[in-house]
Image (cartoon, rainbow, N blue to C red; front, side, top):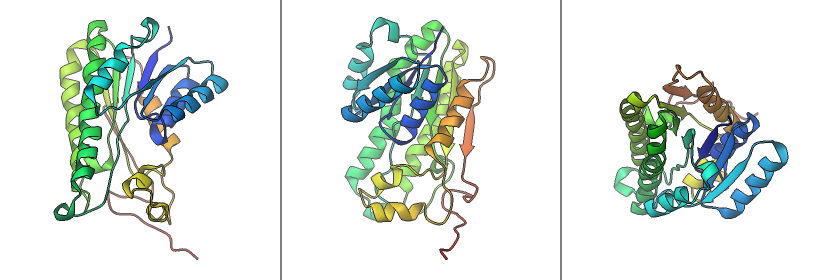
Length: 255
């Protein structure tokens, strides 16, 4: 029987790469995001490239009623979700705490913490009833340490780390696996969003070294979900070779 995977934040970056990788490996995928045009584009790409089935859900993870309504709207053949990938997340701004922009804080907290909770709350009861399933939470190196001017983003990713640990405890009696995948620097739209569309500033983040690609993280997610049922990859930290922690990089000077 083919497995069904739901991936949030599937319209770009890590979510898109994960959806494509799982579809390539034979999973039927539910792709979720806020940008309907991008969902439709990704749906067409999956249908052309792979034999897997694909279903799109357009909703905002930050709004519980939207999450609940979207998941409830799934056709019967899509309701038994085997794998939930809580990928939707973002960083906005890079300011010291005393200069922080409240709207930036709200966006990060609502997406990275509450969005993950909302989707998990709606999807996980079905896994509990079936006593099977796998929840993959996309954390970050920012959830393992803290760096200057990133206190709130780091706090949200520390919350993902704590939630992942707590979920394992709550899901333990039901045989549901919980994995956290924590990337270091990945060259996606992440920095473009953080710097609010400033492409030059975003590009500087990845200048002078080889950052991870979205496909590298998709590989890690697939490795975790493809293990036999008795194996749970609980926590994965995936870093570029040129990165030691959240703020320390070895960058080559331009010649």
